[in-house]
Image (cartoon, rainbow, N blue to C red; front, top):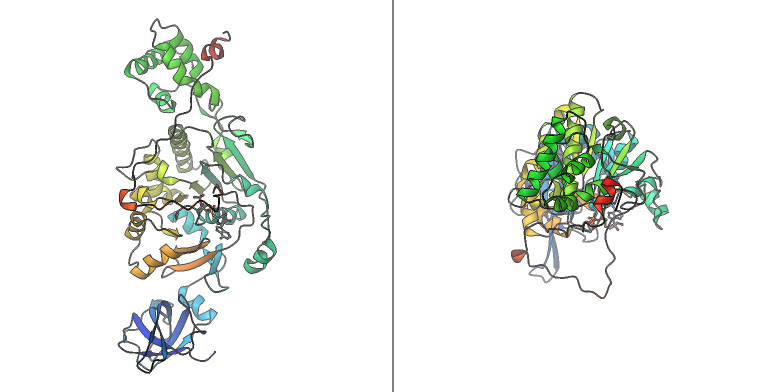
Length: 509
Ligand SMILES: Nc1ncnc2c1ncn2[C@@H]1O[C@H](COP(=O)(O)OP(=O)(O)OP(=O)(O)O)[C@@H](O)[C@H]1O
């Protein structure tokens, strides 16, 4: 053990104390320190703040404030000392084994990275990630999708089935090894090797024109859809007369007692004498173009099976249609999991604020199923990994069910409020810490670790495909006034519909 780094002074408690730092070169904020307590033995603490001032003698005084973590008792329980530390007690830098034992850092779980400022690996239990869900919350550019990919890699290595809802096509590069020019140094630091994963399949609900690198087309059941289901798939608003035409067409097909597709519905609408039919054609055309409604839907046992990762790449798909696809897909998956038709596994939802928005922001067709998986998924072994850059806009019912929280840099006060509301006993210092986290460093709140810890997230084994755009260095980033910030979710431009649907359905111009 190296010599003491300071001496406790002033008023002390059993939860916090201050010490005068002997040499500023010995300690820094966030360091783990220990103090001997007469009844509890070595008690671990973490330096929360450091202040510098000039004393009466004009000498520099450096004071560190420590938050007490505690010590393990004979039965392994973490306890805070019942009596305060004594002024005059010496403070020492905590050794690795004291930190590991006290924080209960175990080996063998999903390897997330190292305790910030140390080489101590931090892992999280894979089963708990699945059974108790996980969230990654951070502002854009702070390393959300990078960290999400690290968790995916850890899951893939244990052959956990993964279904990734990927609105921006960020995760296709899981197939390629990391080609970071600094890979040698990163490999050594984190003890990992670059690796591209084989069993990753990219599905597009569109077609190859929409997503040229997709391996397959995602097909959902398009047979005998109810009028309400057809309407949900239509990206444009339908007026009452148009909705009426769809109902009439479906009723006529049902009356004939035959299996029908969207194409049949359109042919039926074509026989109507109403001029409204042209409007309906125009609005239903994208459904025929995208080809995802089929009488041969992609089997769930193909999408969600041991050792396989299926990425649903939503690039080029209208946001409202994305929500309907996610709703259908996850409802079917949840039912299949309840019936034991697919194995336990994890669903990853990127941009979760668009799929399960908080009340008052918008309503989506997939909110209910995400809420159901969040509250009941643990019973059936269906886990959620929720990722969002706008925690304030994510459904609280979903966020509050995520027992493992990975929080990266967040500066928006509304988002910080949303995060701290869902975390018990988070201190003002930790709140401040969240605002200052550098990219790649995360605050981990896990049921296995008695307090929030800062983790330097490990390098990816696979290549990073984040969607961040290069910003010219001479463009100043825009200042955001959070008070005036528009809280409504932006309505993206609807894709234009055109071309001759008549030709597609009837085979002539
Ligand atoms: N743990 C890490 N190690 C090394 N680099 C990292 C790490 N985390 C993030 N980065 C780097 O930071 C950049 C931003 O990360 P990432 O793309 O994950 O951000 P994001 O929060 O998902 O942003 P966006 O919302 O724009 O997608 C990336 O270019 C990546 O190279």
